[in-house]
Length: 165
Image (cartoon, rainbow, N blue to C red):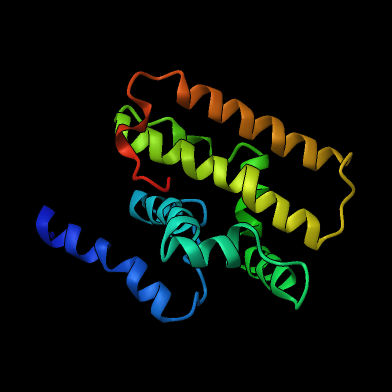
């Protein structure tokens, strides 16, 4: 069994390795997997969305240009790597991300759910050309808003988040 320091070092290298691989195949979890895999999926979302240079994130992930193919590339990447998570989130299968008794873990889980439901959904639904009034779009927005309201209702809700989160 690994001690807590070795475990922390091992997990801290995951985002670096994933970026070095050029956003290679994400970690996939299936029913019956251990909590480490589930937490790594949550952290994978946060690392993809907030990791790296904020100026680059702004241009490449958050607000990619609709000209020159940047938006299509971002949408395709999010659809391929996180589309399954969006489906799971819409079905309530990721609600446990925001249900931890530990405030730090709960807040980071809620933020990851918000990113999946609010931001990734926009990339995926635009990729799939779903109209704004589509029920999946409305459901994702409603769930994201519910998560955000729950999160900000907690005292000191920003204490587990960094500046960009």
